[in-house]
Image 1: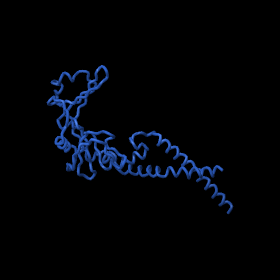
Image 2: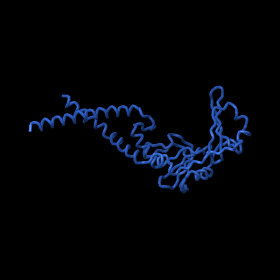
Image 3: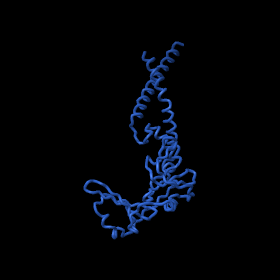
Image 4: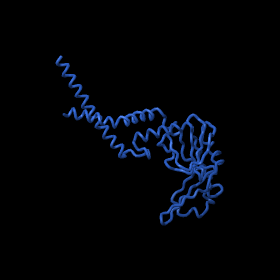
Length: 241
């Protein structure tokens, strides 16, 4: 009775797990073959300019932006070095203001020409820019991959290289945000299927993954039991002969 029960468990669970096992295996192959830092993260092509602030940049900084500061962040932009000032009032409300430390002007937007000139500094191999577009709504690739995880109103600069490199920049400051390419999309596609968090690609202990893990355990244990049962049966047959 136990053997019959384990056989049914093994067979029916396999119906549910076959595709997921296939995705796990293919995903493992993809993760091991594609160099993560070099290609997926773009280190083979990405050259991020350093942020160089003037020595006395704080000397003439507007007084109104020196009050209630909760955070300062220096970023390199098409406008030059910028300090992003975060101010928090007594009610906990935050106000973020990007200020050009050379002109002391508040940065409010970055146009296409500025982004193109700035983006050319980021490619190590001086690849030609193929296209520039303003992303105003999420764009899905391979059906489930959103390169920016829902972020919109950013500039996308696409390069003509072997990776189809895409760089993303802030619409306001022109700050570099993300690097993406076709290999990153493939990697993220299988990663989402690997951890069974298709909408977000971040959770390691979601409900679907926990169910799949439990089913995989039953599938493995029933397979081990059936294997030993088969070995035991064959040993008995050999003894009789």
